[in-house]
Amino acid sequence: MTAVQITDRAGVRELALARPEVHNAFDDALIAELTAAIEDAGRDPAVRALVLTGRGASFSAGADLNWMRGMAAAGEADNLADSLRLARLMRSLQFCPRPTLARVNGAAYGGGVGLVACCDIAIGVEGAKFGLTEVKLGLVPAVISPYVVAAIGLRHARRLFLTGEVFDAAAAQRIGLLHRVVAPDALDEAVQAALALLAKAGPLAQVEAKRLALGMAGLDEAAAERIDRDNAALIARLRVSPEGQEGLGAFLAKRAPAWAAAAPSGRA
Image 1: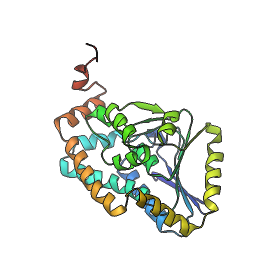
Image 2: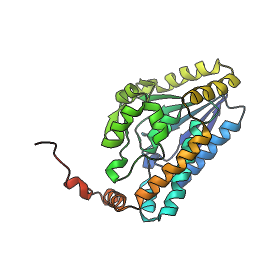
Image 3: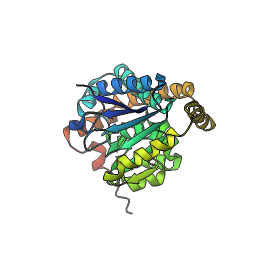
Image 4: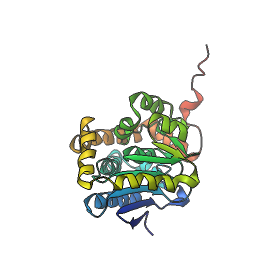
């Protein structure tokens, strides 16, 4: 069994996260397989477009519980190596030379939001929920932050990074995370319509068009790698900090973290 299912149809390569029993949550195997699959698609001239989706009810729930337990128990060096692997996944998707489309079939949290943000086109279903909830664990969405900020803008990112609130598909479209929201039974039709538009363009022109758009925004792969190293170091440091340990421990134990009990009410 693999964590990513790969399907080729008429120049379109679909990568499906295939861990539905845990809502396609990230673990080491999924990160490694998905990174390799994206990089392979980027090198394959037969691939005209790449579709990323999830099996089952969710797109991706973010970090797997067992993976989180490993993070909580690991030292800073191991957490750094782990974060760098996740950073490579996001960077590979962001700078994949092929057009990329997120077929968001359900909820996306944490790293799942990062994957959506890294795709050129994102189409999601009504009823899907999204969240950047890391602050509730005493952490931050460090590795995915450059890609999320580029997708939704600084103003929205500042609020969502700070509150950790859950938002719906309509809000995701309003802030730019999703381009289109459709009923679940219309998702495949919407994806096919977008792929039909992509198929009409010259493949080399698309490579250059994508590079042009990213370049005009000041984004290039070498600079992104330098930022990723800094952000990976940040999250590694926070995971082993007292607050990060308390947040992860509380989440795994299904209790409120210590700071939640002392949260201000906002009333005079």
